[in-house]
Image (cartoon, rainbow over the protein chains, first blue to last red):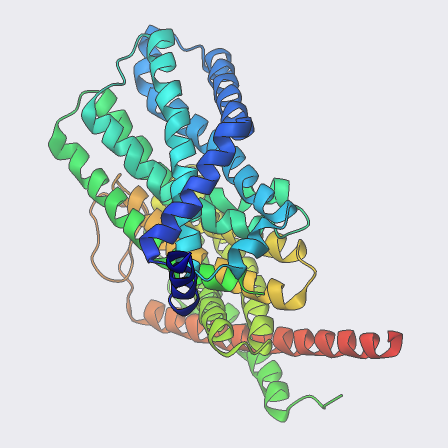
Length: 238
Length: 232
């Protein structure tokens, strides 16, 4: 009992540590998703459908496959990503959870990073399922360490911008159509470098040609995360 | 309602006069370019419009930062005005460029970094306007507009950088020139005069239009407030 009181008074006087609040937000999202599975399943089915449509739209035969695989993959990730981002922010907004989060005595940037890491986790899970399926369906080996690293870097940049813009889009009247319109022109530099780098990997080009794009991706990730972290305060402010 | 400032009236007349002179200069005063012929004359207004467009977007991002720092809603009016102006000018820039490219590059359009970047810039700021239209609360609209203007402004040069890795055929008239660029030329004396004159003209015109648009925005805001007062 005495211990409880001490712990309670501690939370009143001092904020919980940054990492712990961050972890709590990420865990909240993951736990909710593990129970409902509505976000992941819709992203996955959607991703599969996009790949299926591309198969007919581009006539993915053996010769062309190598050239367009990178493009098809990134378009799939980007489209499935918007679906997830929209949903993850919409549930917060609709059920008033965002207000609850904002009332919690944690730094606003912890909320941003928490949502971002959760969104990244969902995106990586979808990618982890799409990649082997794509490899089997089209007989391309996508499991190359450098390609996986590029996909990780591209996804980080994508969700960094996406989390910020989704939290704005859900507060607008036209939110479902708004997010892709807001997100795609802004996230374009990340998609361009990711597609170029992945394409070069799949074409088995020399690492010397690929490094500049990886460096670009890393710097874009850092720029976008820094900017989003700074301006996120103004987005959630009431 | 306050009267129109004296200086603004002077700017109106000045822009009209300058625009007349700049048109005359680029059509008659500047010498004909040896290789491309008369179509090169569009260059004077093409670059000037691009400059004003870029400058407007720069004003929008500065206004955005100022809004977030001071919370003064007047900066929101400035930001919106600057974005609208920039959209129109970059559109003029793209269209004049296309007209020039048809005879010189033998195509209306090519996926060159500058062309793509200009188009992406239009799309970013169209998205900015759509975002604003979707939000009713004026304070939130101002904040979101400012945030998006900042993020978009950072993203546009990065897009340019990403595409720049592939080769460009767009001529670079000022500064280092790439021998692979098609349709480049050296500016001689009278061309330079004409060029800088139209640059100056467009800057004055841009300032005038921006001023008008900001005034309009402030009036609209006042009308909104009066409406609220009447209704309540």
